[in-house]
Image (cartoon, rainbow, N blue to C red; front, side, top):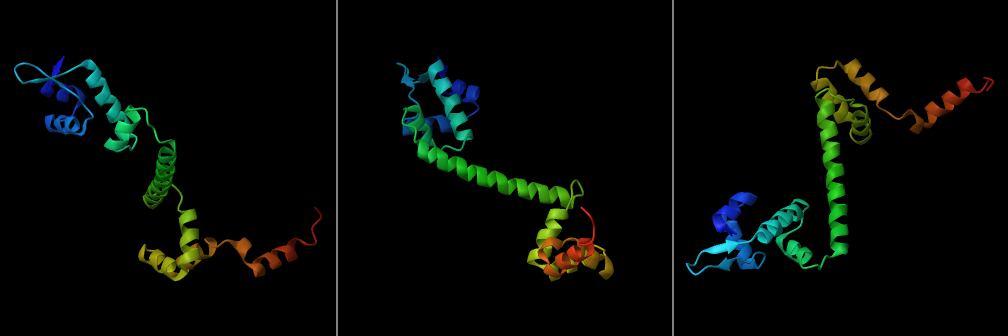
Length: 164
């Protein structure tokens, strides 16, 4: 059996949090004759499981539903899709920062910026110390040559007479 302060310390939560959980019905301590609350090892395990569920992104209400065996699979599926989108966004952010720090290639980023904001791309390159000619070269190699009809026509002309 645990007193509230012992239980709080064992699970890394505050006494106030446990009292709040009790108010919500998530935790049910027993009162002793002296008025102190005591909790069982089952209560401690319940709190540990709730911490795991919360770490998975569930609210206290959703934790309660899960603990009561009323798991909403559709809600969990939606929550998973949201989390996967957030992870993909954070991964793109991490990749950009790593590239800006020189830990990986900026090729994809340059291609995207050249596509959506070519003038700003060149200005940014020059603000980073590139000369106008160097910025122009980076802008040129950042274009998708396969998307330019004139480039492809000339490419086909050059290779038309070769034996394959």
